[in-house]
Each structure stands twice: as C-alpha cells, then as structure tokens.
Length: 317
DNA sequence: CGAATTTGACCGGT
DNA sequence: ACCGGTCAAATTCG
Image (tube, rainbow, N blue to C red; front, side, top):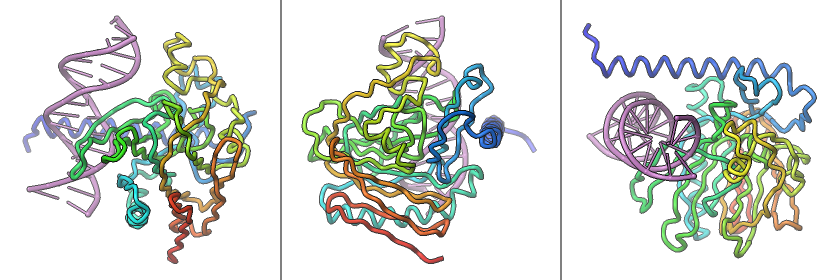
C-alpha cells in the first residue's frame, strides 16, 4: 500500500515516542536500584518514580530525581464558590477514576500522578517550559501547557497547566500540576508551593506533600539544598551558565507568599501511600494529614479548601 | 546564535 | 466529529 507522507510522519513520530519511552524506562530501571547513592532518600517517593537521567556528564555527579508525571487527563477549572468547588471535586473524582482505568495502560511506566489544582498566581518557583496553548471550549482564556524545563535533561516529566481565572480576579490563575518533580527546590512537593509574584496578600498557602516530613520541612522553609540546578528562571539567569543542571544551587528560597484564594486538591499515589499534609503555621501553610486507603487504586481524597473539608472517597474495588 | 516561545497540525480518547 | 493534549517547525527573544 502506498505510504503517504502523513503516514510516514506518524510512523516516525511513533518511533520517536517509542524511543523516548524506552529511554525513560531504561533510565528509571537503572536508577531505582542504585537508589540515590549517598543522597538523602527521604523516601518520599511513595509510588513515584525516580527520574531517568541521561547518560550525560551531569548525570554522573548528580542524581536528579524527578518523578514521572504521566500525561494525565485534564482537569477542570476552579470556580470560586464552594458549591462549585464541590462540583469540581465530583468531576475530579470521575476524572481520576478514568485516569486510573486508562492511563496506566497507555504508558506502562507511569504511575498515577499526583495532581493538584490550585488557584493562584501563575508563577511558582519551578522552571517551566511552555509547550502548548489551547483554546478551551467554554473558557474565556486559553489553557497554557508547561512542562518541566529539565524534562529533556533529567527526564522530569512534571507538567502543569495554567489557565487564567474565569472572571472575578484576572490576576489569579488556575494551575494544575501533574506529577511531581525533584528539579525544583520544594523537594518532593510535586505541586510546588505557589509563590506569589506580587506578594501582596498572603492568604493561605497550602502545601501538598507526598513525602516524608523531611520533605515537608524542606517545603515549609527548610530549604533543603537538594537541587544543584536552578529551579526558577531567575536562578538560571543569574547563574549565567547555559546548562541548567550545571548551575549553582537555588537554596535561596524567596519568601513563599501566595494568594491562594482557593485550592482544590486531589491526589493519588499508585502504590497506596499516605500523603502527608503537615501544618506549618509560621509560614501560613495549611496542611492536613490525610490518610488513604491501602487499595492501590482507591480514590484518595479531596480537599475543598474553601471549607476545609476533606473528602476521602474509597471506592471499594 | 542558542534558547524559549508561538502556533498550527496531529493524535488519541470519547 | 469534537475536544484536549502534545509535537515540532517557525519565530522571537536575550
């Protein structure tokens, strides 16, 4: 049969994808065993994956542990009203269920992602690279797609989607994080602490951690110097180096202020782990402890921070 | 000039 | 067929 260019393109794309996937998987397998030689495991990776690090020079000296974020399905934006938030939560439940049924099949190496939605300013402390923008039906504003800048270097596939708030407050953005990465300074808080760019009102900052208290400590101001490469644009700029991973540390954590007007959080770990949310009043963090079922695929929980109620849904399976 | 962003096309899921 | 997510060539930026 005659082969069209379109088919050829598709074919080569598949090949490329396959290569990428294979490379990642290979790296993942290779890295999990050696298990962070000498590095503080902080064993916060419950069910999350260490990142591959390419066999570049950088990878030999550092152990960039980005966790893999599967390209999970999209999530909905967050309405301001509590009632709407609850509705969103419901939708997210369904969403997650679908993800759990499907996405693992698509990318065998991918665990279920940590996923967090937050309504906050667009900027956080990670270094992201925009890879797409899409007009979303019934949305005023386009959705912007970002992935971790270190994806290619370290295989960190954390991604986020940013969408401007519908109307009331244009300065707010709905940020949806997929997966978790360690290339940012906030340790394993897959969904990074949102740093307000204007530092005005700091209402309530909610930190979601999938890791140990150590990690949380880092997130809550412990400022662990876990990352040898810059995790924000400014870091990169100031360093003057061209290779991100070779840049100086990013220990200097800017004040973590945020205008988190509302957060709706949903997260899950494939290996049925506990997600810790620990409070750190000093920094205006509000964290909750929320324990999830052992079932490897249970809906884990929802937190409607509007009312600070926790939805823990264990769908027996 | 290299890196980051833009943007239309492509692809898979529903 | 529609929609959302991703890719990648082209363009812009520093």
